[in-house]
Length: 123
Image (tube, rainbow, N blue to C red):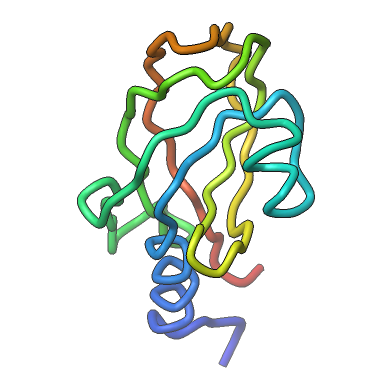
């Protein structure tokens, strides 16, 4: 048999992300929960189970999890370049991605586009 991953492999990874309950817009890539939620945080929004969409078929070479578009509330002024998904309950940083730079203003709402998390099939 060639390279292969059971669907439970993808499910476990996406379940870990789906447990995230807050998304932060950050001014740079955070390395831990404190950097995501405080040091580099420019905006935040609560996340719920309905904010994540499975695509079992995924891409032709793996699986993907969709994260729906959200409206965040500004916590500080600055240019947001990264999105961080965290689980506040255990203060874990679970996923970071880049985004097109977006200007964030303190106490002002800003729309964040949907994005996908892709796990490629074994190569």
